[in-house]
Amino acid sequence: MIQSDQFLPYGRQTITQSDIDSVIEVLRSPFLTQGPVVPGFETGLSEKVGADHAVAVNSATSGLHLACLALGLGPGDWLWTSPITFVASANCARYCGAAVDFVDINPYTGLISAPALEEKLIQAEKDGVLPKVLIPVHLCGTSCPMEEISVLAERFGFFVLEDASHAIGGRYKGQNIGSCQYSDICVFSFHPVKIITTGEGGMVTTNCPQLAQRVVDLRSHGIIKNVQRFELPPNGPWSYEQQDLGFNYRMTDIQAALGLSQLQRLDEIVDKRQQIHACYHSLLVDLPVRLLQIPNGVFSSLHLVVIRLLESDSEHHRTVFEGLRKSGIGVQLHYHPVHLQPYYRRMGFEEGDYPEAESYARNAISLPIFPGLEYSDQERVVHSLSLLLSN
Ligand SMILES: *Cc1c(COP(=O)(O)O)cnc(C)c1O
Image 1 (cartoon, helix red, strand yellow):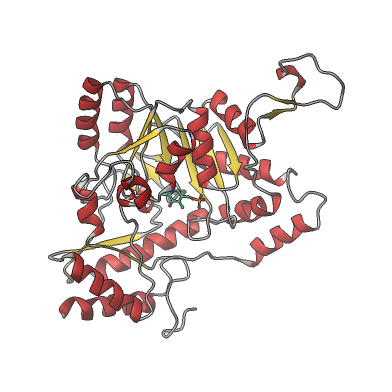
Image 2 (cartoon, rainbow, N blue to C red; image 1 turned 90 degrees about the horizontal axis):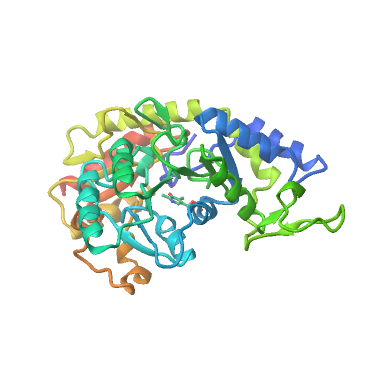
């Protein structure tokens, strides 16, 4: 229950007694990490989303990094993504020494635009700079146009890595996000603001056994323990081989216990988010704002509820934003366009490069949504918003 004078964050975790019990059980067990619970969480998640393989990692950022490496991304390659995302969707290319470019968004959905992508691919083919990897980002938990993207991937020969950090529990054309029906590999985040949490954590799903094995190997230093896979003759029963330069990106059993427990409630959590979204839909109907659209055939997990202010400019946007914050409503902008971050500007990106993304950032506001949000909280949000919009 949230008091009316309390600050409403835009998102927050829900922890139940059974979540707590599951974590305590691990704390009392012999294994805090590399025990049986991580594989249990991986199996549970792969069954839930319908993927052949799921590999747990310590964050979605690590998952994106390993997925890029598994796809062979490296120096001289290009990775494309949306400018309206968290910086990690672009940074993963930089970790691999690859270059980043962006594709503008569809202003109604906030998602990467398939026509803009096609146009850019046609030009890139002429210029000989086709991407090796595309990262469609399922902003708000709403799936990108994956069918169109997979057709383009086939035609132009690039890999598709879904950044599904917002999207566990979502569906596209009847398929669960994470089933990789239209992609090579997919990454989820379990940061506390996301749909389900492990504190920090992520999961990589794929139907390709080779990609899954690469991610498993690189997650733990590039060390191989299976003698069958050794490059050299084993020098004793104590031996393992480091065959590649990997990392320690492992998830702990403590985290996996929380994740597995939360996963049992996934449908319930997404249902609640659907209800909250529907309430916003009716509460906002008379205001000069527009919710981001959810295309036909897409079931969104509704990680975020984003409105766009109509007939607005950046100054008005800022005023409304600050006004909501002053009334204790933790609105956010998801996201300031990645290409306008100082790090990316130093690579030559500038204002005007992606007009739809930049216009989005001048009038988008994420409203609070999380399972514990009450209807009265929503009324309060919309009331404050309507006062600010009538000024
Ligand atoms: C949260 C998020 C990430 C990074 O997730 P972590 O688990 O915090 O590393 C990546 N991409 C998007 C779109 C996100 O929202």
